[in-house]
Structures are given as structure tokens and as C-alpha cells.
Image (cartoon, rainbow, N blue to C red; front, side):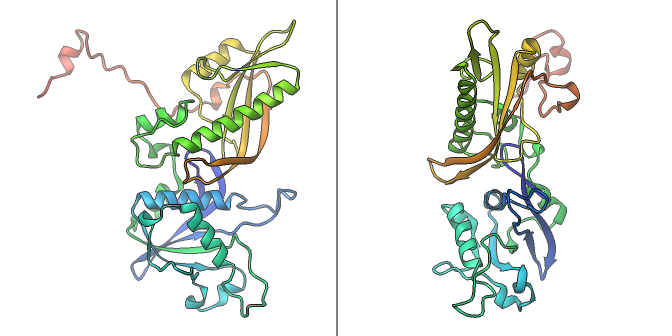
Length: 322
């Protein structure tokens, strides 16, 4: 099952839940391989991002990691005791609620996981993105339910969470189940994507204004003698297969077509997710010229319900309570 990031994008990171053994459930997190030059052979290239997301969701459940094993390459033939990752100055079981910086914890796992299965100090170490078996307590033991929760889906957020997700002003926290990206991470993703789009259009000879704080689109581009161009900008750590649009963004794109572009920066890497000053890097920019949202490509993620409170109809169906 693929991991869905907190912004709703699907990451190239795969895991599945293994049914309980001796009462302890576990996750199988697949290794990363291939290179950017070989798109066919490349797999799970967002290994690091996906593991951070899983740890964040597990922490929200107050999960405890009893042990982590390496189950890839030569290590998969070793006895269980020799597959275990040993991290100096960190004893297992580990309560994720006690981990202040999950990204540092993930780095420790990668660093010391490389040493598993090496027979001597002179042996070449394994890769830093190896297949992991993560044993857990304190989580639901229903395999399907746990997989769904950890993978992340649109229904994991309540209406407030969905509203926050589609709000361009990143950082409005949600009251959902804790599966929301931090203010700092949303902000840095948004700013990174907008800055990339501005560089692109300025390079095309446009005068570019960031109007996202006041309009239903992000960039207003003008150039002498030409119709103004409006640009909707989206940034994501995923592949960009889906993006979240507000109702006003859709209405605006339809109204101003064909003078609207959709500019997406995908596969953004975030360092320091747990810090107050995360950093964005990498990514790939895609632009859809003369964009008009196709109705068949739109899926509702939220509804506005007319309650009729305040008019005569409400007297027949609503009863005031103390």
C-alpha cells in the first residue's frame, strides 16, 4: 500500500501490515532502489518521506516500537536476533511519543540499519534505504484498519481538516485526527512552489505579481500588448497525480479560461519536518497552459450543507436544546 502524504498526495513509498505474531503486529516497509535516470527500475524513491509520515501517524496513536529488523539482501537469511537494528544510547522498546525529532530517529535507523548483516568491520555496509520490519504495540490489531489509518486517506480528516487542507494560507491547523502537516511545512512547500513559478514566468518575459493573499489564484502575469495571465500554483511532496482545489479556484479557472495556467511543483523534498524552519529542495515543475478544470477530473472532498436554521422551515425540523 502506498503512503499518502499530509497534503493528500501519494508518495512513492510502499508498506503493508503483517498480521500479529505472538500478539505483536508489524509493518513491512519496502526498500528503495533504482535511480532517477531509470524510471522503470526506480522504486520507492520517496522512502525517507514515507517513513517520516508513517512515524508521525504512529506517534499520534501513541504507538510503541518494540524492535526493528532488516529484512533485505543477505540479512533476510539471518536469525531474528541478528536482523535487529541496534542504536547506541537508544533502548527498545521505543515510545514514539517520547521522540522529539522523528526525522533524526529515522536517520538513526538508516545509519545503523546499514550495519546489520555485515560480518566484520571491514565489510561494505548495506544501503541506507533497506527493507524494514517494524514491530508495534499500542496500535489497532485489525490489519485492514491499521493499514488504512497509516496510509492516510481523505476521510481521515474532518470538515475542519479538509478546509485547512484546501486553504492556500498554509498553517491553519485542523481539528482532525492529528494527521495534518505542520504550519511550517505547509508554508515552506507553498513558498517554494510559488518562487519556482515566479522564476519561470519572469524568465518568459512576464511581469509577475504574487496575489495569492487577495485573489482566487496565485500569480498575476502581465506583458505589454498581451492579455494578462493568471497562474494557479500547487506544491506537493508527492508525484502530483492529484491536487486539492477550492471551489473559488475552480470557478475562477473556468471564468478566465483560456488565460489561466496550472503550475505544479512535484516531488519536493523536506528536511527538518519536525523543526520550526524546515527546508524545501529538489522537485520537478510542470505547467498546464490554458488550463480549464475538466468536470470529470474533479472529486468532491467536502460539502457545504444548507441547514435552513434561521428561516420558517427550521421551526419544523430543528428543536432548541439546553
